[in-house]
Length: 375
Ligand SMILES: Nc1nc2c(ncn2[C@@H]2O[C@H](COP(=O)(O)OP(=O)(O)OP(=O)(O)O)[C@@H](O)[C@H]2O)c(=O)[nH]1
Ligand SMILES: [Mg+2]
Picture 1 (cartoon, rainbow, N blue to C red):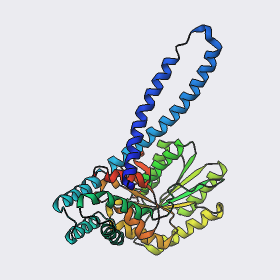
Picture 2: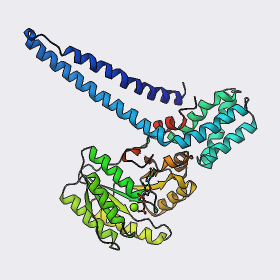
Picture 3: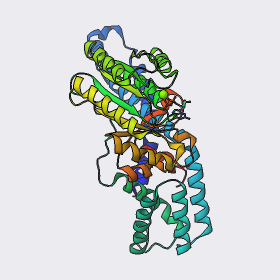
Picture 4: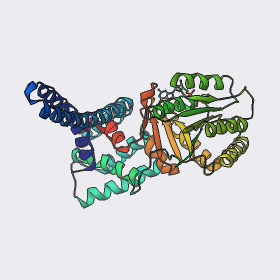
């Protein structure tokens, strides 16, 4: 069985599991109807039933969460899926046998999906080899192999680290960088909400003192999600605002500090100096911090987003990427291209404007969301 079939089975199986556990729960309810003479046994029996029920409820919740998050992927990747899959189906209908023309058209489709030229070349080589070695002649049997090979290229024998690197003790500091309008501030708000739901305390720091209204925007988000806030007036030195924020987090034992910054890439030297200064201030107050520097990229900007990743990588130590607005593009292949271009893992993706639409990036859910209609 190919990788894609496995992934598909896994998620279809999860949906079924949620239905089955609900039935088990109803059976337990029926057992509660005991006779009063058997009191002791009943108490012990009830305890066991309750423990079992609780465990089942937890399992059920876990499965439900998984299904919910797969649904967010499915919905958010609709544009990409419809675009990509319809082109592949047309191609399959046009060529029944595998020819050189078929390979060329397939290559074009993949490049148009923003997968990245080198990744596509690599992929085409592997595909040609498999077709030759496995003596595949029929175009329709290639669809599953195409998905498998794309997945293999992304994973590429590496362990994909998509979790935030939390500090062992003291506040965890996460710095957000990226050019204007990519979604830094809303991503911070969404992430703050997620972290709060995990039971951790959060502080938002308005390190973007450049744009009028940026501080106010973040402060409003802090109030909405119930996070602490540090900010200053417009034009203040970002490093000094961040200095105050980190001290507040240390004094008040806040678990996670999320720092917003202004991104003016047109002035690269200034930006580099500013980020250096910010990093110095943070590192002085907390050894080893920032624990993460997340670069936010707008997926709808396509190849432009890739060049932003390259530029930021030159000026600071990026540890992860947040790819926003994937719901707004038909070129969801950009996730693969980023990996190829900069080798930095995508840690979160934005699949819409609500807070639940920010998801930890999971390659399996992504592959499923992108190709589920294809088989
Ligand atoms: N559809 C969609 N919209 C998003 C997503 N993420 C952010 N946005 C929208 O993008 C717009 C810009 O978001 P901001 O968070 O203000 O971007 P920013 O990078 O902080 O912008 P500046 O502070 O101006 O540099 C807002 O309208 C957000 O709602 C996403 O995943 N999907
Ligand atoms: Mg902002």
